[in-house]
Length: 348
Length: 243
Image (tube, rainbow over all chains, first blue to last red; front, side, top):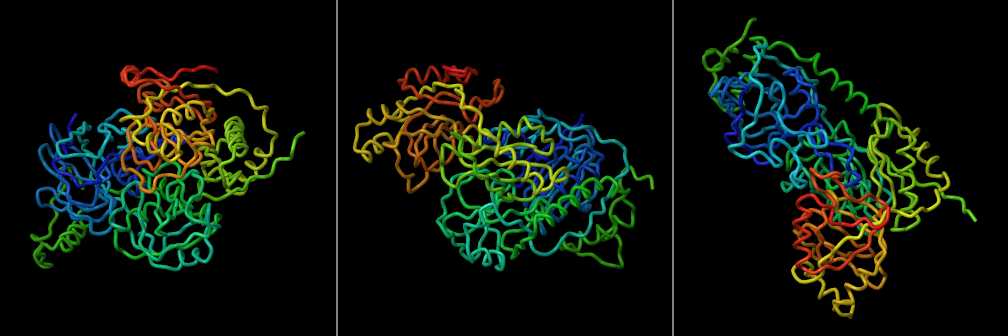
């Protein structure tokens, strides 16, 4: 056994998996990762089951240190500078921390949440079949709260597997797709305003809900409805007319009219949208949304087949890119300024 | 005489859930149909349905779109919702002890003033009500009850509180509620119960089910403190007086 020590940590960092289901009728929300594709990709890199628990990383700096043995990890999700003792670590690759080594994670540049998976997964006591943190309900393991500096995770000692990279399809661009309803009839022309305006995510957003800033969306009959059930991606409109998109730690029911729902496929992409960045919504049909759902399920299942041994050329290019955007001086003619170190166990 | 049931509205709630809406308002008949459909869905062997969430007026049905499409499941749910309602049979009934007023119910005096009655009369009216768990939602174990006497109905607070204590018993609009965890609330706080409607490590984790009948009983602060210790140790404290 080894340990992964939380040396320092960004706010909003917690253990998350696919979430816990079956108790929403008692008010217990599933929680789970905001960006399931990135979470599953992190697991695929290490040969874990796709929905094993990972560390969902908040957008600021964090440092994780291996103790008592080597720890093999992977990093996906938000693009950010990362290094081990100054050697860059690329997003969408695996890497092994030797005993005592630290992974330094910088501030997210594109996206909000990163995912750090650990070979063999995270050890903990599942509650309702999940390790996912739901701080309000006192659920989650090994800690029923976001991670804090000094926390220790028991993990498997690293195997000697080759390090990997995963080739993900190019990120989907364009508007966030929604299915209208269930209470879109509570809005008249405001529906068009909702679909034809630029929106920004407020900095006061969290895993319960993302608050949107944009034009005021007016209700036809007031903002109080009798509470009914919510889902991830429900877009509810409270009295001030500024929509809130419900995220995995939402309440299971809510009393504001819901104009539309973000499609499952776009939830992760929406969740990674950085505060202040303008985006739009686009309404699609249920048939289109469910076709996207099937395609997304196929993409998730394809992830293990998208994992390849890291080759040296790939590492170098990624290291170069990473070093460049991190602002480190890099000379194209002097490879000492950008050469990635060889993986300790490189066989190829 | 049996009146024909009106079909519910089948509303899209994203690409993996359907809201079956029986009413837009809080309506006892609609809630009965919600709870009846909930039972029918559970026994119908619909493998594509992953979980259901009954509320006052609608049933939220989560499903796997890889197994069934929106239209096919919507038709099936409509068919089930139009089946004749079963004879209303007596629900199980819980007696829930409440320490009213003082620190446990900081709004009791204000509610009494607003209703122009004494605090004792507020307690008498609340204890005198015959309640039903209409839905559980928002946070774990937060149980919304129908059946609040009309003489106690008043609008919610202008300024919701960000933090209210665990076990709070409160009223808001035409509802009363049993809250389990500390959390925000815009309702008027009448008292507290030691009953944990949600407690990890206890069997069952969740004490109340939608459809359960509830009676409140007033207890003093000393009894509340004793019951709180017992409840912490895993006792129900709520008493099952009919099952």
